[in-house]
Amino acid sequence: MCLARRGDRDAKYPALIDKILSSAGIATVQTGVRIPRMNSIIERWVKTLRAELLDRTLIWNQTYLRHALREYERHYNEHRTHRSLAAAAPLRARPQPLVPDQIERLTIDRQDRLGGVIHEYRHAA
Image (cartoon, rainbow, N blue to C red; front, side, top):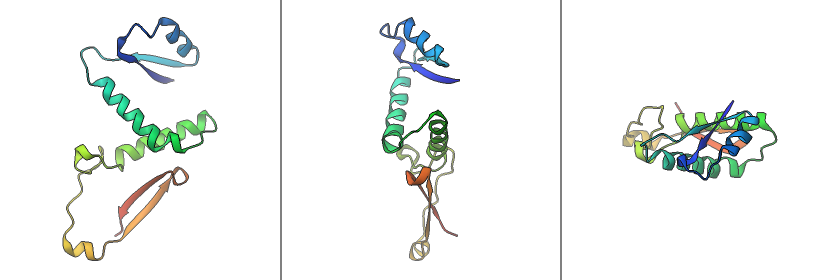
């Protein structure tokens, strides 16, 4: 079952929309009460998802869409750098600063995900 966010508890989203979504197997979840930043955080994540994945990918069917979303979620949480986390990913420890000795012989490995839409980089051992 999929989940859809119901925006801001606003009256512009009538019960008819909930019925249409539920007939497609999508459950609606209302935005939390007294959580003013929730909507902006979700909108930022959706914007990032669209810009980095969905606008660059041809989605053939629901199975491939689910696969692509799982891969992107894993990439976002385990590999993608975040400015607010000092270039770390949410589920990964912050990177240690490089010493000048390491920079002289720095080797980077690249791994492509989703046919090259997403690139992940690691220091080679």
